[in-house]
Image (cartoon, rainbow, N blue to C red; front, top):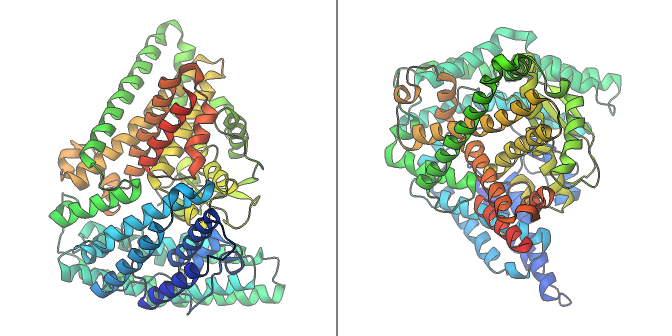
Length: 616
């Protein structure tokens, strides 16, 4: 949710909320129907509030925003700009969420069933997050130190390019709306200098490494001039718009070329040059931003940790210990596999060589090197891991532009399909720059992003009746933990169904390596951003500059992955250990996903106990 919501939006949302809630009860309603209608009304109003007037978000989540969810455009569409949050803004937002909390508490969870109960829990968790945020005495500080407007990966400028890439042209309005966003960048990009200035005034100056890396990203865009990939991308998108005739296509292409050249590029230039004035305050900083901010930085990390895990008043020290034990066990298991392989170096050199061909990315598991072949295998393997979807989605693959791919940390990503239409095509975008020569990694990456990972979990949630609010507000720790867990499940399935000893051992090694690497990254995150360790101590002489760049400006980013996979593998082992032969992989995972693609961590444990108890 954008933290700089305008006051007018707050007032409009309050009126809509009260009007909608007042109209849900009718004389003929029985009590259960009343509570069901009320939770659906509140969920819908919160969805409208969270998505606001962000046409780029509505474009992703809805084919027909007005018909499906009652969205009505207000004002002009503009790219994300910066405006300072005042204490009055924060107080109004706190009051708004307090009102939502009050209305939610009037609904009896015990009377709700199915997707209504799921929606209630999602709203309860999210409302609590924003009450703790806007109710914090440090809220104005949080709004500055928690922003990603400017960072080493391009900040909101890079986000704009991603939006253009993923923006769907379904009708002429879509083409006009994206054109309006493109034109607005001339003013919105320079507004980020106000953000840097506000940080300076509050004593939160950006370090030179952040400013320099952002400038380098902007300079690369400027150096490409008319060869910048957005020109080609938008031409292809417009030429592919079947609802436009040739004259209209040429006219729009001309307008977009002008908008990119005279607005986008101008905004990039002003931001690039203006950032030069903010160098020199912190030329070399060894600790994280949050560590430098002391008590306020610690408070922000606690809020962030609770927000992405869904754990109220999270025990971070306890989570650290749980993750640490996961790292120790995974490392021990991985080393045991390597010891077994080492013993084969002389007695069975063919298995030894084949194992390391997988590890060194020289060989693809099962010989599957094409994404289309891999996803077909994943859909077959998934039948032994998760319930079958009612309708198998058609899955296509896209590839990042090489310019973007060369600077992106993402190996691949799944973009959610519209929430208001089932049976639509799904797509996964692959970073060919990073994955082109990594066939073994491509295998488990497609399991993570596709089947039975993110894509499956999201489509499954839609099939189970998840509402818009639940679909846009999943708990990232469960969501990423599930995707990691799904990758491990596919590797385990592959090991069980292959006659190749080398592949069996590789899968066994890779499952433990995935837990070890991501959980270890989460420990690094905690040590750097929460416990205050310096880069020198944590790096121990090795070059972790890329990791620190991510950790510095995206605190808790690895928690979702490392803590997520720790939790999901933990509940899996608990359920399997408690039930033995009565344990069913498909039924257990059905239970885990019974409340959408991202319940809170605490709810994950509750669902596990429920499954164990019902199958004893």
